[in-house]
Length: 108
Image (tube, rainbow, N blue to C red; front, side, top):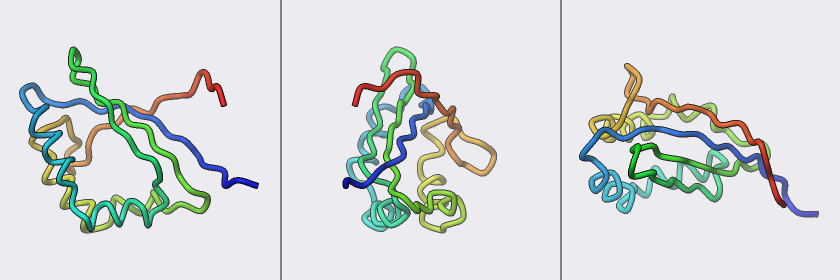
């Protein structure tokens, strides 16, 4: 039997003029952050850009027993958010503002 993943999707928003830098920083994602995300149960994570609206569409899969809820307290995650805050819409604690999306269709 194959492992069942939970899929989550959400949108975020870049500030104007930051597309190139946002991509550059993600192309050079810190190894410790990538390791943390994987260790937290995140699998198959992609972010897409709508260049007209600057909305970022993110979709990821979570392994059973994931620990994604603990990420906001981890120092590496906090540092990444601080690093990315100048480029995007963020909350007062520099967490990217996210709008969860509800699945309305799925073709397995």
